[in-house]
Amino acid sequence: MPDLTSANRRAPMAGLPDWSKAGYRGGSALPGPAEANPDAACHITAQELASQYGVRTDGSDATAGLQRAVDAIRTSCTPSAGYTKLSSITLPAGRIVITRQLALDADYMVLRGMGMGQTTLAFRPDAVTRYDTLTADGSDWDEDGMTHGAGKGGWTWPGRGLLRVQTREVSPKYASDHASAPANRKDIFEGSVNQHWASGVALREGSALGSTQIRLATNADMARFKVGAHLWVGAANSAKFYQQQTVGDSSKYVNQHMPQQIFQIAAVDAAGKDLTLDKPLEYDLPLNSTSDGSPAIGGTVYPSRVTPLKVVQGVGIEDLGITQELDGMPKLGVRRHTGRRQDELRQHRPGVRTARHRPEVGRRRLDPAGRDPDDRLPRGRHRERQEHPGAGVVLRRFPRGRTPPAHSS
Figure (tube, rainbow, N blue to C red):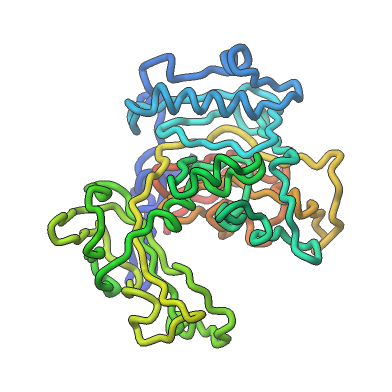
């Protein structure tokens, strides 16, 4: 295995992004047996998965059983776990059928297979998981058409997939919508949607690029902010921001927080309503979408916001293969000489939310869900290595017969 620690890093270079802290816990060595939880009850074996949770390789649906195993770890082991006290779930050798998205929301847990080519999670989306709203021409998932109550499908960005490392917390604001939602709409209200739409805190003053100070609104509840906790910071889009991106068509402007970054809180001034960040802002943080002199987008003044995050951390996925089954499923046709799935079946690769950086696989850039920009189907014969550098999350997929290049940037 190549050296993945900070020792195998190029020094930061002026004018370029600083990747010197990329990798597991900022460049630490990957955990081994010495970091395992000494409590045997916090390690679910392949035999226990079969006997207690019904997770088998006989072609039966293992989704519910595997989710129960994760939930058991989260309830019994996560409260006392840590990076040097990791729990684990060991999958058996063979093909394990999963039909719905699995939530890996137990901190400090490793989901481990028996090895690449031996353990395979085979994703076969069921009727609840498949997208039931498509665009008019049938070419894509219609996020805005997938609605329930106040929510819509775009809140699940970047979409459904086999695995998701993210909290399933539901904001009190959406509790009734979540309770009344059918099975194929409940995920709209779970997890990261609550961090921004329901929980964002406005500012009383903006901050410049390079600053480490956040000045919260005078009515901010400072009890929500703790030293060491993670903080999402989103800057409101403005007309000038779009123009800087060479977007001249104002019909394309939307009220969102495109510039955004995740920090840890270094200090809290409860009396002054101020926060100190652990690193500088990488963009200007305006008070709102008009404070830089821009006209309001769509006639609405949109505020910048910050949100204390509930992150899922210390999760590892290793020594297994991931694929999506096509047998018996309809084919959309052939595009770019690549077989494509029907759009209602086009699910994403493992999703890692509330992580501080973006993943990279081999030499290809991926989106935060770990998928290729062209959304091609991950082939069973082509598995590349992924090390996710954010929030202590590691995804390790070992290729057959070759070693990936070490990253030194």
